[in-house]
Length: 216
Image 1 (tube, helix red, strand yellow):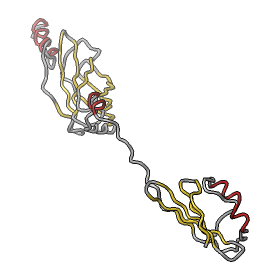
Image 2 (tube, rainbow, N blue to C red):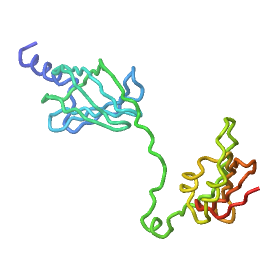
Image 3 (cartoon, rainbow, N blue to C red):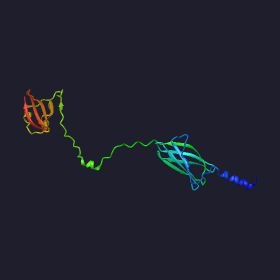
């Protein structure tokens, strides 16, 4: 066989495994990661790898790509359930072998709450809620167990209707017992005092003002 014939036979062998420009392969699945796919596209003599991830979290991987004329590592980041691409630094398109050497997946993003935002018109049309008026509670004070000094008849006579509660306590001191109850929208208190003559006096206080004195 002459030299010219050998060269003619060698030329097709060099082109074996080289794809034509504009050729695109079908999607291939990685054996170790079922939701990871890739394909190759040859355009103007440049090879590009397209990656597709079906995982719910972001994927970061490192893959080794080898062909008859190329051997390199690619770092790839793919958003959740999205695609990415890696342009290879080669001027030859061929059949590549892909080996994923490192694969990590971030946690899936939390689901967004399905809560409709309140409209501006709805906020202005509805009146602001009004808090109900406070209802006076029942305040009960049990009689003291320790002995208290008795008041004199003269100090009791110094108490007048219209005097404030503070003035009453200043003249007579703390009562033996006190009961405060709500009555027709007012707080009515009954203050019981022991008088040194053996009697008991009840002083009525309405909303902090003395309204009646009834000695027994």
